[in-house]
Image (cartoon, rainbow, N blue to C red; front, side, top):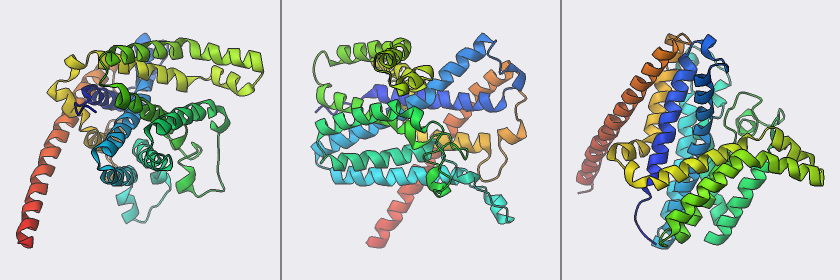
Length: 362
């Protein structure tokens, strides 16, 4: 197996996190009267914003599973599994921490909103599930590949059955992972479906990336399958309904956001992998490798984690379109700079701690 890094993965991660930042900034601060689908610019922005989360989840499943499978070949699978479980738990913890209203708690004011499940908790649990599934299939790559493809398809096809799921009898901390009834945005279903598809794609790279014509084949496949999903998946599901009379396929066809968004993701993958030599710039790759710190920093600035004072509270939905666009550019730049400095600070602190520990041991 080649040890060459798949640079397009970091480039896609950079694209996804920057799209997430500008999407959150504009959605939080744009004046209400401009949120009108009669405006072409707003429709285009909203459409591309809808691609962001599916891209982020799919690429997360791809990179994590790719590293997990490669770890078996390199002989450090136990360390990778331990690291994956630890990172999953860490993401869940950070997700809750970002919503913890510390100052409200100090004055004795409590509510259940901080139990809402967001991106980090969902990705964290998804990573843990991937590890569990990988262990259940006895670390067999082919079996893992088939399992993840089937799981992704089943989760997406069954979406109408749990679309309006409510679980009042289950503890809130658990039901929030499965139901939107209490304000959760990113439930494990259907979003784990994108992670599963990413995991399936990772097995293709693992098995075939060294073959001479693999890049041409996978880029073409991504693009063609993506276009088919975007334009023809709804027609296919309606045709299945007409032939077999299974109502769930009609429900999918009439509200077919999951497969269409997966098509969008595959087209993005095809473009970035085709242009890999052009997008593997140091700055882009660095942004792609700093997605967690960038996400945390942007969340604190916009939504006022811990303090309750963020741009959401200080400015609100008051910006004109041109102000929102300029502000988003400045916001992206500032958050990225802070994350780069944050990383250097962490490295300096960790190096000093390690030196101190070495001295104690000696």
